[in-house]
Amino acid sequence: MPEQATAADRRAMPGDSEFDRDTAVARREPGVYDIDLHAGWTIANAVNGGYLLAVLGRALADALPHPDPFTVSAHYLTASRPGPAVVRTETVRTGRTLSTGQASLYQRDEHGEEVERIRVLASYGDLDALPDDVRTTATPPALPPMDQCFGPKDGPNPVDVGSAITDRLTLKLDPATLGWALGAPSGKGEMRSWFALADGRDADPLALLLAVDSLPPTAFELGLSGWVPTVELTVHVRHRPAPGPLRVSITTRNLAGGFLEEDAEVWDGADRLVAQSRQLARVRLD
Image 1 (cartoon, rainbow, N blue to C red):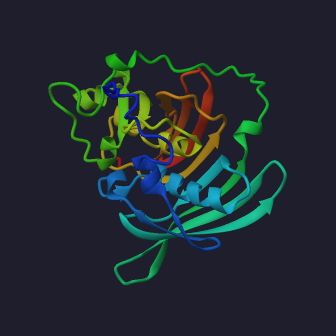
Image 2: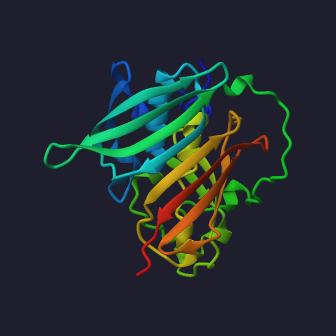
């Protein structure tokens, strides 16, 4: 009699996970891709910016000769909604080590007019071809073990975050950055969490584009609430992550004029800094 499948046996694999299905683009013609943006990756009815970055990143991976995103810079022009969208890509330059391309995502508005939602400029390379030499002063975030951290549904009073995306992710936040959920924000612009895809699929470079924009906004710990829309987001992918959960640390040092920055670091289980990002976001001050 065969042995009963373990939880590890049931984990989704790259190419066969919810993340892969929901970011898959269909090539209509060279440089033009169709996708139906899935409602499962929304925050208060707006599609999450990290998910959108992964969608455009997948289209660029198909359009460019190199497989992996090295740097991706995105400007979020209008809020994306679940439903049909088209991605148009253009190759800017192709070299031996890096290729550069741009991509834009469009949707139809209520009048049937095409509206550009997000525009990206990115350079792609081959992470597996990079040398092993690492010289860094950066250190991994000091998170408690995952079983001592908390997700949206943990505790006697689960937090209603109004975000479908939380069902697609396993987020376990450092209790030191959870004061906002208890009505006592720390006043520090910090957010730290364990990160994984809920179906168990290990992160790859495209999933890192999602990871940097998946935590609650640091504005919550600054005592602010409400939507914090991204204006611009740049991600640097530094290494292919090792299997297992990731650690994400986000900090804000300056909120001024209704805008703040968020600097993110993503670390894998081998204590490697696998991605970094900075974004500029708007906040509601009233």
